Length: 440
Image 1 (cartoon, rainbow, N blue to C red):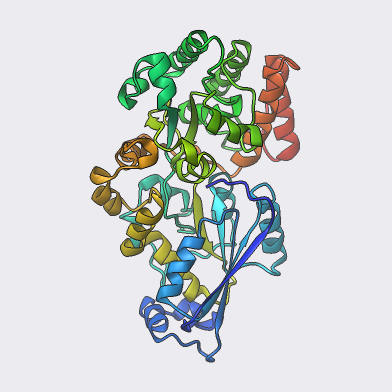
Image 2 (image 1 turned 180 degrees about the vertical axis):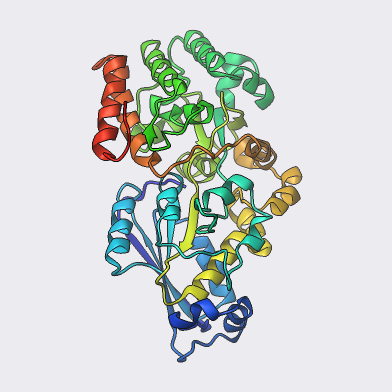
């Protein structure tokens, strides 16, 4: 998941029962039964309190840490939250130096493949972890992202992040005559229809209502439509759907269909409250951690519908640092967060989080409702959207290239450069950042 956190936050939770950890030299010989017995006994090999460090770019694991406290008192977990834009550099620095690295660290969708393919995360497929036993109940794309090119399981996640178009019901009723999610979805079944809907809203509202807050709202749409990953067989590829996306965003700006703001800034959050934008392209976590937190007074005026193309955005994967001295405790935490059904049910009840465990999804999806969505069942909706997700085009290059692309699109839609210069600049920037790639 992606959230803006203004400064580094360190949260230390002291959990009262000692959980044992095997000495690192014995780790490969430890069995899964040893780990379970160690946790139950609550004693370290030398009787000392265990201090576990965890780094992330989001504070969402605070909920899991509190639950772990109830189950395993007297372990001290230190959660260090680093702003998303700084996180890759800071975690890369400590991993490469081998000094100060945390026992557990997370990876966001655009970063995770870098860590999965590197040697910093422990292989969880082997004894004593046997993580493969837990993947059978995990949504497939979530499981696949945590597996490296050699089939080693490096990371797991508790969440899935399919996307939606989350719209204002009051605006829909006033200008479209209905707020029914299915009917609204029919009006944006593809990008051409989506653009036409923006024109309708613009014309009927005399220019007051915009379709999206800014062109970066649509950044994930082309990735679900394109045939090629950014990098294939060592070659940088600009798919035709990426080119089409450039053109569509230019049209959005020229035809006054967007509110000309950027995500995560104060004007973006203000648009969630003032009703001047019809809706936002946000994933599962965007509903709970963005809209609900920043527009609480609008509760009941929102609906979910299928976007013009299926997409997913973000997600948080956890892995164990390969040189951690507390791998057994770290595994107990990751196992609870990602596979313990009792905990996942509690997480859903407390936060509405959309989890990656298929059994839990099937259990709750038919009887869920959300007052913020005027009683709509978002679990049933996202359960259907999961089936449309294709994560096969995710690469370790995605984060940096996507940032480059969006920056260039902003210049292009504002008329500072033409399309050819925009695409050539993207190629030049990629070549400069990744000289090992072939760039035509």
